[in-house]
Amino acid sequence: MPVDIAKTRIQNMRMIDGKPEYKNGLDVLYKVVRHEGFFSLWKGFTPYYARLGPHTVLTFIFLEQMNKYYKQFFLSG
Image (cartoon, rainbow, N blue to C red; front, top):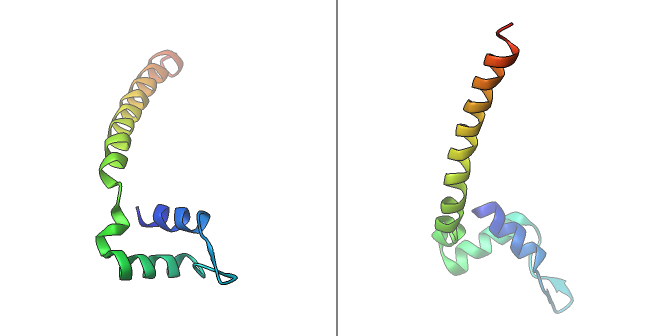
């Protein structure tokens, strides 16, 4: 994800001739696109989605079950 790329690059930034490698997040994104290509901003999307997809589905299933039991036991009386 582009924001994660910028954050990670800033955290791991080196000093070149006494100056930081990047000025800010937009500078990171600009240099990544210029040197590595536009789609390199989405490196790691597949494992990210593989982790987040099931997590999101399970969260909504759990939420629905909790709402069902809440209505059944606490709002029925």
